[in-house]
Image (tube, rainbow over all chains, first blue to last red; front, side, top):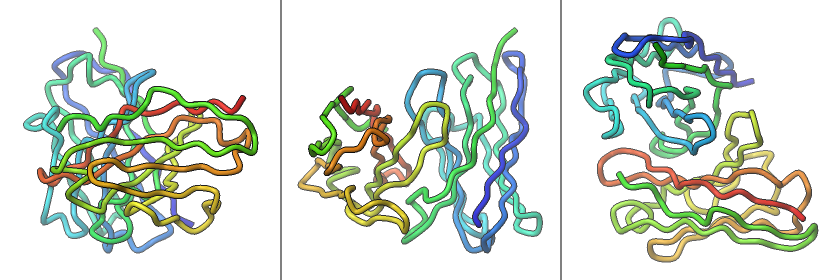
Length: 120
Length: 110
């Protein structure tokens, strides 16, 4: 069955960087686009980034553009999200999700998320 | 990338039907058929309920249906059950090659 497992979260000081990882299994990872979505405590969902099946196309939310980099390693079945210049408002649960169906813009499977807390 | 507009809350009794709206613009909801709906229970990851406006993934109850008219998409849940009580989010592809979410709707089953 499809499984997505995020890791790399924790408590980080403002201004530092962090790399999140998402391990995928149960499907042909190299055939699917992948996304990162975050959710601040008690708030709604916010889309963060998209990467196409082969890494050739990457798109970012305006709110994080310039501070976030999405990447993938199809040999390791992993997708990554690097966030630099962390701010307190980046505190959130970060989910990776598979981009299923036509075009890869429907998020059909989600991981359980990893919590990032930005605090001094 | 302004958030799509959803009502903050809706409620209904078991067995009734409810509809949650999701209003955007010509640059997102009105311009593409990449509208999805997600259900999220407290402390859990979101679950895809509807994709591409009106398609149900395998395993999702046919009590859930989606539609779109102009810049507004809708999720209808018929035959409400207590387990339907959750937060619901819509999302749409945009002209900026991005996704935008709605603010979320809390469904209470009375």
